[in-house]
Amino acid sequence: MKAVENVDAVVVGTGFAGVYAIHKLRSLGLSVRAFEAGSDVGGTWYWNKYPGARCDVESLEYSFGFSNEIQQKWDWSHRFSFQPDIQRYIAHVADTVDVRQLIEFNTKVVSQTYDEKQQRWAVSTDKGEVIHCSFCVMATGILSVPLYPDIPGLDSFTGEKYHSGAWPSEPVDFTGKRVAVFGTGATGIQIVPEVAKQASRLFVMQRTANFSLPAGNKPLRPEDVETYRKDYPERRKRARKHIFGISNVPEPTRSVLELSEEEANAAFEKLWEMGGSLNFQMAFNDFMKDERANKRLADFVRRKIRETVKDQATAEKLCPYDHPIGSRRICIDTGYYETYNRDNVELISLRETPVKRITPKGIETEAGEIEVDAIVFATGFDGITGALTHIDIAGRNGVKLSEQWQKEVGSYMGFTVHGFPNMFIITGPGSPAVKSNMVMSIEQHVELIGDTIAYMRSRGLGAIEATAEAERAWMERVSEIANKTLFVKADSWYNGANVAGKARGFTIYVGGVNNYRLEVENMIADGYRGMVLEPLRSDQKTEARASL
Ligand code: FAD
Ligand code: NAP
Image (tube, rainbow, N blue to C red; front, side, top):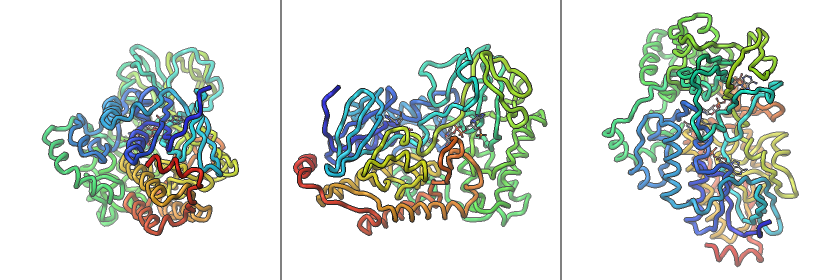
C-alpha cells in the first residue's frame, strides 16, 4: 500500500479533456495528479483504433484553440482526420504543455469519497494508492465504457472477438476471414467498408438502420490550411458563439419548407456533394423542429440509399423509417452503402431474423447458424454517465452518485452535481456535449472549472456545491428545450435506452453552444447563482495559500 498523498486537484482521464484540464489547473498554481486507465493519452482516440475510425467534425475545427502556438504549428492532413492522426495530435498537445509526468497511466480510479469536515476528497486507485485533494475533475468521457450486447453464449465463441471501443493496438488482419459486425451506428458504418475490403465474407448484423451521409473526406490543401491558420483567432471566437461550436458553417436562417420540393432536393444534392453532416444540419433551421421538414431530408437520403444499393431488398432494409433523421447521430461514411454491392457482403436484418445465441462457431439467428472466424462488436457505449457510475463515488453524507443517477440523472449546468461538492464533470449531463463540437465544449468546461477554482481560492472559499433546487430547475430547462425538438423522438445512447435498466431521459442541452455559454456566464455574473459556497475551514487555509 502506497502512502497517502495530498494534492490540490485530481484529474481522472486524459483524453482531450484531461490533458487540457491538467495544464489549466497547473497553470493556476495548483498541484495536480492525473490517472488514466489506458497506457497513453488520447481517450476516445486511444481506445477506438478500429479500421475506418475518423472524426465527423472537421479537424481544423475539432482541435484545441487554447494555444495559438499549437494551432499555428499542427498540420492536419485530412478534412476528417483518421484516428492515428488525432491520437498523435493529443499526444503532441500533452508533450507541448508538458503534462505527462503528472499522469499515472494504466491506473483506474475506483472510488472517491468526500469528507465534508475536511472539504476534501479521498481518491483511490486500483493500484492501492490514495490521494487526498480539494478538487476532483472528472475528464472520464461520455463514450468511454464499451458495451457488449447481452446475447446468450457470447463467451462460448471460440473465434476472435473485438469491441470497437477497446480495439487492440496492433492492426487486426481480417484477410480471408469470415467476419460478422454487430452494430450499424456511427462506428459500425465506419468499420463495415474497411473490413469488407479484407474479409472473405462479411455479415452485417443490423438491428436498427441509421441515416448516413457521405463524408466527402479528402486531403487538405496546404494553402487552405494556411488561410485557416491566419484566421484562427477570429474563427475560434466565432465558434464560441455558434450554435454547434464551429466557425466554418454558418448557422441556418431559413426553413426548408419555404422551398418547393424540387428546390429542396436541388439544395440537398449540393449538400450531398459537399459531404459531411454539419453542412446538412446547418442548412435549414427546422430539420429538428418540424416533422415535415425532417421528412423531406429523410426521404432524400432514403432515395439516395435506393439509388446506391443495387439490390433493392437490401436497400429497403437499410432505409431507416423508425426515427427522424438527426434524432440519433447522423453518421458520415466513406462508401458504406456502396459496400452492399460487393459480392462478399451480406446484410442480416435482426428485425427479420433475430439472434438467438452466439455459438462456439458463430451466430445463430432464427434463420440458422452463420459460421464466422471473427466477430466485431460495434455495439456502443454506456454513454454520458457510464464512466462516472462505474467509479464508486460517495459524496456528502455518503450518498452514492451511481444510486442517485439510477433514479434520475441530474447535474447543475452540466458540470456539477448536488451532493458532490468540489467535483467537476467535463461535458456532463445537462451540457451540450455531443450536440456540439466536443473539443470546443471541453475547452469551455475546462476554463469554467479553472475560473471557478480561481474564484474560490481568491475569496477563501473551501467548497462549492449546486443546490438541489437549482439542479432540478436546470434539468427541467434542459428537458423543456429538448421537448420542443425531434431529438427526443428516438431511443439511443442519447437517452440511456441502449443500457438495460438505466434511467431514461434526454439529458443533453440542445439549446446551442452559444446559448449555453450565455447561461453559464450569467450564472457566474450572479455570483454562482444556484450554488452554495462555503468558506475554507481554518485547518485547510495554510495548504490552500501555499498552493496559489
Ligand atoms: P475521452 O476521450 O473519452 O477520455 C476519457 C478517458 O478517461 C479515457 O481515456 C478513459 O480511459 C479514462 N477513464 C475513464 N474512467 C476512468 C477511471 N475510472 N480511471 C482512469 N481513467 C478513466 N466528438 C466530436 O465532437 N466529433 C467527432 O468527430 C467525434 N468522433 C467520435 C468518434 C468516436 C469513435 C467516438 C467513440 C466518439 C467521438 N466523439 C466525437 C466524441 C468524443 O468522445 C469526444 O469528442 C472527445 O474525444 C471526448 O474527450 P474526453 O477527454 O472528454 O473523453
Ligand atoms: P451506437 O450509436 O450506440 O450504436 C450501437 C449499434 O449497436 C447500434 O446499431 C445498435 O443497434 C447495435 N446494437 C447494440 N446492441 C445490440 C444487440 N444486442 N444486437 C444487435 N445490435 C446491437 O454506438 P457507436 O456506433 O459506437 O456510436 C456511439 C457514438 O460515438 C456516436 O453516436 C457518435 O457520437 C460517436 N461516434 C462518432 C463517429 C464519427 O463519425 N466521428 C464514429 C463512431 C462513433 P440499435 O440501434 O438497434 O440499438
